[in-house]
Length: 179
Image (cartoon, rainbow, N blue to C red; front, top):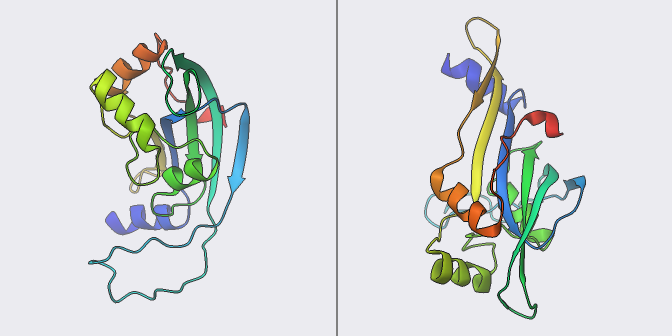
């Protein structure tokens, strides 16, 4: 069973859907096709080839909501945010985090690829420092029966509390039909 599921993932037979709160107002719906160089772990990947070519990485996104705080963070008078639905078409390490940072809309709470000023504000004023990325949905084929399976994870309370503070009273569930 594990082998069959592993093959589904490696052959891109599994659809994944995420929710993310990002910095700024990201508009509309689009696909980002931006190759990523493999990020190696200093300890676990110390024997890996260091100079690999960038790998294909594709992410589809749809804006769901916009919000803002009356707080000057950085050079702007107000801190602006977007709630986006994300669907990776490939599975690179930290792909969603790196793609959104490339678009200059980093995921809130991302200490590696994000905006330090925004993250400090979140921690100081909202009492939250979590990564605002939620794995919301997984669609796959059952390895024994062959029946399509849709797994949906409820949005964590810590995520919805922050969203409510931005003015989003109801965080939408993420159907993969957004794409």
